[in-house]
Image 1: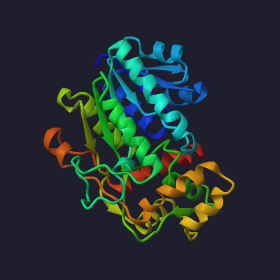
Image 2: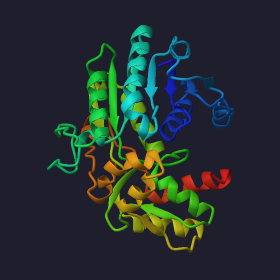
Image 3: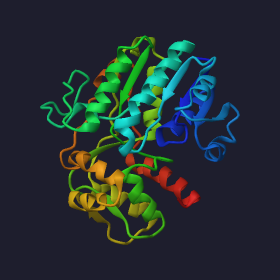
Image 4: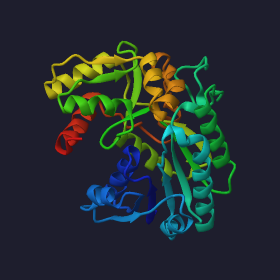
Length: 313
C-alpha cells in the first residue's frame, strides 16, 4: 500500500489509525471536517496529508479517494443521525471506492450481534440477531458492504478508550477525573466488561488491511481482558491521585437526561450492554493473522490520561 485514506481521522479510532499508518511509513491522507483539529493532531507528521472535507460532499470525498489503495472508514455520527444518515455515508464511501478502485477497511462495533447470543465470547460464526434499532442498522450496513463490488474487511470492536476517543463512556469519566471534578461511571461498577485501547484496535485493523485473504470477512478484535468499573477507577486513581468518589450512571438517569438530550435518549436502548456485556473471541485473528494487540489497561490508561492532562480536555 503506497497511499491510504483515513475517513474520520480526528476521532478516537481514526486518529489512532492515522498515527499508526504514518509510523509504519505509509503515506496517509487524514480526512475530517474540522481543519483546525486536523492540523492540531497531525501537523508534525511528515507522511500525513491533511484534507478537510465532508463525507456527504461527493466532490470532496472523491478528491480525497484519488490514487489511494485503501480507505479506512472510521466515520461515526451521533446516535440520533444513524437512522437517516449512516446508510447514506456507507453508500457514498462504497461508490467512491468502486469508482477509484480502492479497498475498504471498516471500523465497526458489536451492536449487530445483539444480546441474546448463547455463545459468549462471540466468534465470527455467531448468529447476528440484533434486537435494537442501532444493531439492525449496523447489520444492514455490514451486509451492504460485503455484498458490494468493493473488497471489504470489517473489524468488530468492543467499547473504545484511548487518546481522542471523546464520544465514549470511558472518556466521559476520565475527563472529569483529570479535571479533579465529580466523575461518573456509566453502568454497574461491579460487572466486568471489555474495552479496547484504540491504538491496539488500529494495529489490528491495519494488519487485516495488509492481508489479502482477510477481505470479504468480518473479524472480532477483543480487548486486553474483562475488567470491572471498580478496577478501572482504582487504576485511574493510582495514576492521577484522584480521591473523590466515582458515582454510577444508571439506566433511569440516562432515561431522564434523554428527556432533554437526543443522544442520551437514543443511547437508552444500548444500555443493556452495560448490564449484560458480550465479549469477543479473537481466536480467528490469532490463528490467521497473529497475536491480537493487547496493551494492559494500566499502560493504556496511563498514556490516555497523560495526553488528556496535556490537553486539559
